Length: 236
Image (cartoon, rainbow, N blue to C red; front, side):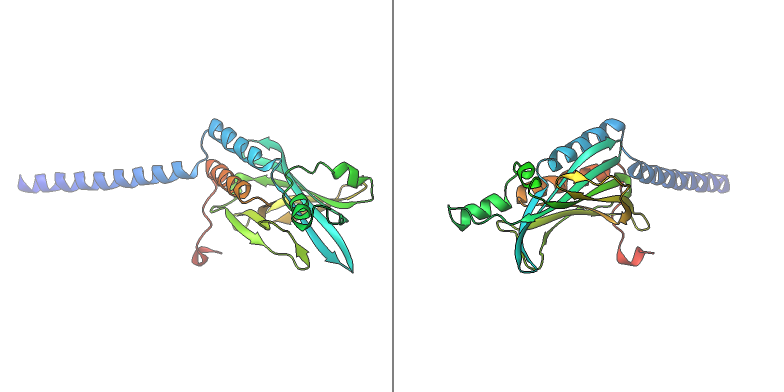
């Protein structure tokens, strides 16, 4: 009888171990699966609000002996579940002379304006630009989302400088990008140059806006089932 109870005890222990393994696997799989569609909709909506109207930087640069101003903006123009289309534009124009109010006023105008209200006026003056259409899948991006200060040679951003918010693509994944040239505010009528990009990067001039976008992007990536960037030892 003692042997019978021993066998029963071993079977119970074995069943407990199997049950524990199954529960662990279930938890891991649930953590890897995207959340429900409502969570994704809310998270991507917050990300869109954090980007549109805030992802704007202006740099005053010295190029071939001329002072120029480079304005870069980005906005989310399409959302479909975890898939996004981000339109980024980079416009180069002759630098505006310093304002009569002094260097501080000029810096405020060129570096921290949140809306490019004078873009139409500049477009009529022969500005040249590049437009990038970035097709991203948040489930293929990784955390943590980073905020880093960017520096460009021969350029002055003023204020807090240029802050880059970025999320790297999962190893082996890449986003499709279509690049088009622009002149006088008009996109050239051609298919553009197809490229790939291994991270989603957005640029801000206001630290609070950059941090808000970072949090929103990280939440959206997690909601879509994006993984953490692997340790260097785990990279292929």
